[in-house]
Image 1 (cartoon, rainbow, N blue to C red):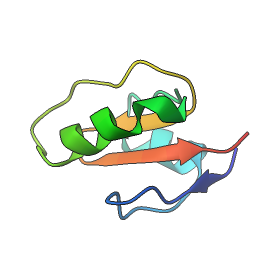
Image 2 (image 1 turned 120 degrees about the horizontal axis):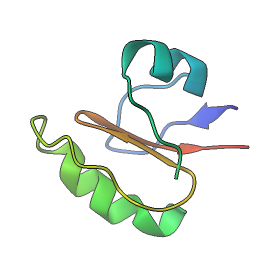
Image 3 (image 1 turned 90 degrees about the vertical axis):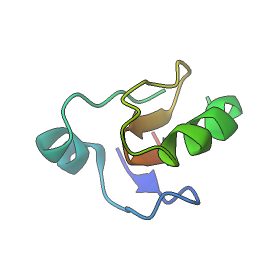
Length: 66
């Protein structure tokens, strides 16, 4: 599964790489982007955006291409 960069999230990679280094990872719809970006601004926020195709972690938020 390829991942394309989603500003302001700086990391570009694939879901396998994310999963290896950022467990747990969840791929969620693009409608959730604003929420993810807001959470990205708070590196201590480990909440996840609940929608399809968005990968969210405490310091990243990217759209996962299938």
